[in-house]
Amino acid sequence: MNEKILIIEDETLIADSVEYALRKEGFDVLKASDGARGLAMAREHTPDLIILDIMLPLMNGFDVCRTIRSESAVPIIMLTAKTEEVDRVVGLELGADDYVIKPFSMRELIARVKANLRRVQLSSETNVEEIITVGDITVDCNRRVVRVGNKILHLPPKEFELLRVLAKNKDRVLHRSVLLDAVWGEDAGEASRTLDVHIRWLREKIEDDPSSPRRIITIRGIGYMLIGHTNEHQD
Image (cartoon, rainbow, N blue to C red; front, side):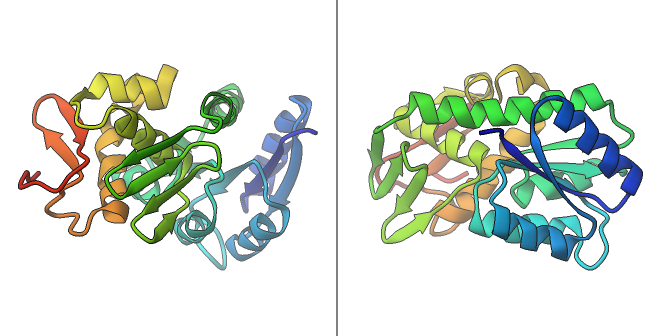
């Protein structure tokens, strides 16, 4: 079965061009021209990846991303005509996995689509039946579900991979470069500034008090560590 891509983009020329390029690569493609319709189609068709514009009628891309991410771990690539870093950071904080700035090379977009799909596939192949427990955190790598106490979390792909790597190396300090290579792979150089964003987002979900983390600890100038017991470290 071909992988299914949902394009949520109101500029017809862009949407049609992306659809054409994706179909040439063998993907099945769905399109929506506004945020509300895109959200409905994401829920109805459960695509393998979503390409999401920020500036959309009826419901903007940030709100669409936030809603989808609360319900699904599907990879999301955001499209934006804005070049300010803050827009990209907001998208990443809301759970987007990647972003492409307009005008973009179709070759670049296709490469990013394939890279995000490949990460999901490799993760599911290499983590079959592995369950990692760190304190009251359980990472089920087969089902890609995280349990913190009695709370069940469905994390976005990169957040899940980041927590999985930290959990497999609990109570060990992992250098930033190690985390970047493990989670972002060939895009590690470009992703350096987003590592802290993903750590912050993880803390919002697994820490009792994200402003004073007790689980994911920053080791200044080096990287991060996931600890399996309560301590008095602070970020």
